[in-house]
Length: 207
Image (tube, rainbow, N blue to C red):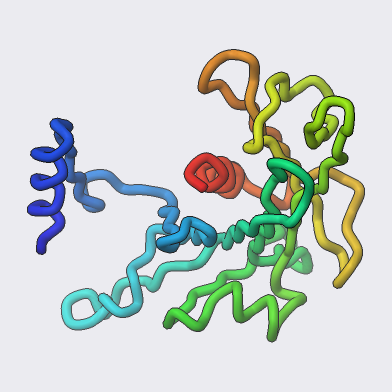
């Protein structure tokens, strides 16, 4: 079944119309994809899928993997937050201008998930800061310095993993709800880019 036919069936069943956009008509900076269970999100740049780069498309640039986000449910008290792991290519700072390493997976077994095992120095890893459970409020709490004003399981902070069991105390990214409906705050710092930060925010909303 074609994508257009599937969208037509969905529109008929739900009463909602869906628009189909061409990537050539609407260029994009990055693309975020997830698995069926929405536990793994991968962001690619605008390059082509290696399996499609044949024939007339043989000269096109293969896509680069920009980040990998993994979610796992933690076995904690009550409605516990999820465990979040973020992988991004490390930044090469030896040159005059720091540049992130380029990861171009050529098959489903390649990419940052292979790099973190075989080339750990080429990957920057981040994990979510664990909140503290408040027995009186029966909630998990994190300090957001006033930036986050509404409790939510979507609220989280990322800190850099500096070793197998060591993490930095500095917060690299934080995201969460504001008091108004559907309003969120997103703060981030180097080495994450605006594209990384927006992709991470989208993944936590979709998860």
